[in-house]
Length: 330
Image (cartoon, rainbow, N blue to C red; front, side, top):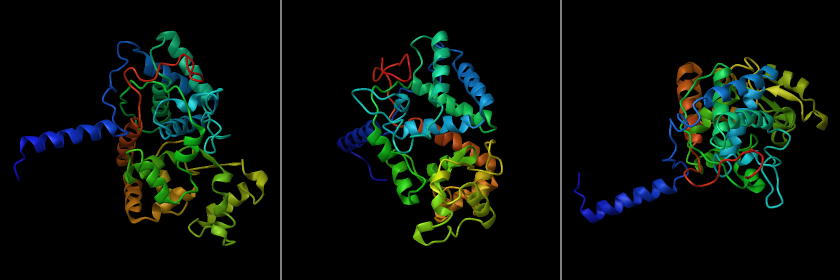
């Protein structure tokens, strides 16, 4: 190995520091014990809030998980998706990927209110949303992972950014992967985080193009299993009025967080085009097969990818604020 002189070493070290600072995942101020002394009951409060919401509607677990994902992909995990529109900005709630589909705002409001009673002006809405996503997975039978906390809330939101940055189920896999890599994630994270579709439902409008006139061929998507195709055509008849009808992302165990999502892909039963596309690439297909065979591998990797995603573009220290109300800037 060639020796490095002091100037080269200094230059290399500086380059590393610059890369670290500029990285969308740089989050040196997040801490696994951030609220241990300032809000020791935080996890219990969030868990109870999610549990109560799921008692009213099991589907809410998937909605909260999706809300966290859509928040992090638009300018970082800063709670911006929770902001209502103002005179100074048009927020993310009515962007294409969120309009009439993003849900759970009232649940976050209720949890925030309880957190404020226990620990006033201490816990960010961004951290509450991050914790709620973890609890949603755990309470539906999935893995539990430790979370570094200390995010602060953003003071603005962007409908334009939400329209541009959130991956769409109608996009090719290469486009989706590019959006992930732009956030400091990789192909593995695409495959792992897509496994969140083991719970929840999708509107017919997000996959109906597969059922009748796929790619303008006049025929259904040939990768769609015949039995599932028949069921979906019944749920989503070829009329615009069916666009808001719902189908389970995983019809086998719709309300249980498990690895059956991957089994469905192997059996050509992925609901969304973006899901089934994971079997069309050799690298992603190999990962799908592994997660199909080894559920604990999926659980382990899912927690790791969620931590990784939860560090995208976070605000810490004196940046941002701790909102009193998640819907409005202080």
